[in-house]
Amino acid sequence: LAETVGFDIVTVGGINTAFLQIGMGNSGTSRLYTVNLANGAATLVGNINSPQQLTGLAVASTVPEPGTWALMATGLVGL
Image 1: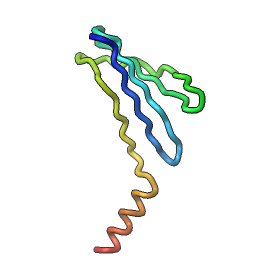
Image 2: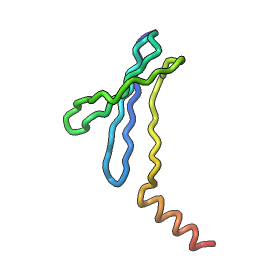
Image 3: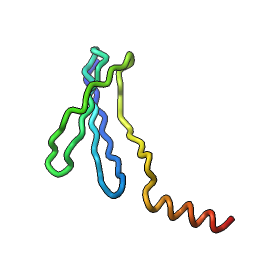
Image 4: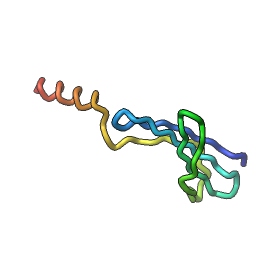
């Protein structure tokens, strides 16, 4: 299998953090990097060992954006 690449940007507190995943073909190992959005420099975070080849990357933010809180508050007022 060929190498695979996944890329995602997560925004927490107004700060964007980019993540890059590069699958290493048949090895079953992918590498996870952070990417500096200002200059494109990638910094290795570590290896992702998986019995299945990863085909993409999606990062979930655990901290809701301020707009989410405003929508929730508006919805609660309606109750």
